[in-house]
Image (cartoon, rainbow, N blue to C red; front, side, top):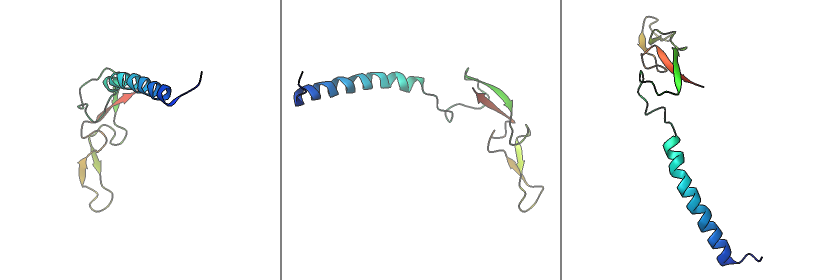
Length: 85
């Protein structure tokens, strides 16, 4: 069977159609951790103590005033993070 331009176009069109069909399923299954709210279980992980602040929710700055504390950037002050396996 000879591969002609029209046959090649037809194959490409079929493949693109299948890819776009499957893309919708892929988008629905994707998980964006930035959209999840902390403290809300997503069903795909479990909570552990934040390794950055040891569950305190704050971090201490070494530079400048050693008593200066700010919210932990890893757990956002919650003291725990959701771990996915």
